[in-house]
Image (cartoon, rainbow, N blue to C red; front, side, top):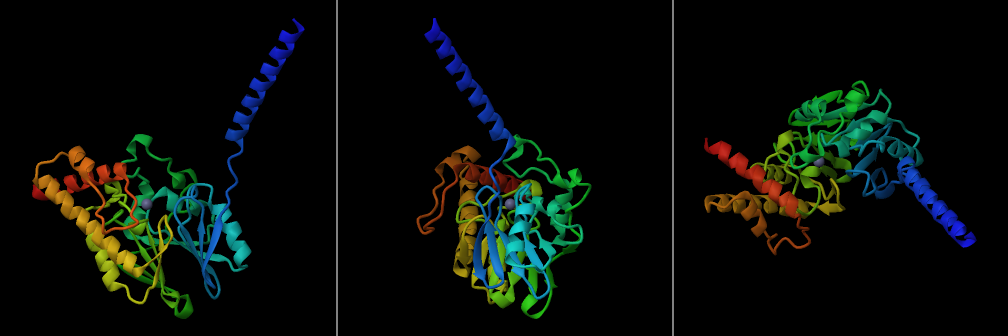
Length: 312
Ligand SMILES: [Zn+2]
């Protein structure tokens, strides 16, 4: 009898501690720790796989420019990390495009900070539609509405804009539709560096976000225009991967053009989206590219829709 009572007590304690640890897991999320990669004396990349897109921190003569601000809750950790690097104030945020994992931290910055985006991205940020292929998750909460409009863009450009001069110069470019219809290329000419955002997120299939104006018919041309028009850049901060070279960007443009040509051939052969996607293999010449079957299927569907609507 005694033994059973002890056993019961032990089971009860065990169950209780499980409940407590489950409660703690929901109450105290993992601490938001950012890794700093020093790219130049005044250019840093802040990253953490759970945080969203890569953030660039450019320390200018009088202030700091931040490119992309990650997922909700990561604005403060970005500001804290910048405070360890410099005592200069953040003056400007540039968002490469509308996605929540690149813009949500905006709401945690002081309201005095300028927020610069391509003009279509401003429209997209007012709506914050779910990305193509992510609809089953439902529309993400509109973080800007939740914050009374704080964090929305204050300045836009159409094709080209220059901020600052001399060592502080930053050139913004837009070359057309790709990942979305508002992908900015952000160039730091004095450092021969560029942040490409998610139009070059990684070596692998891009997210073609038709819901936000993205295009599989245009992304290859857009990347080709960028790689041909922008001069004197050696290194590229990608949306979600490591720093890459200009040759990598040129190759990525070809990868996307090759994918479009392949999809066109599949459509011509009368293949369904599913049948075509199931056959796709990354061509061997693209060494180091990571396959993504779900993304490939979504992209085939996006391109089929674009090709069908252009036939009408
Ligand atoms: Zn994105």
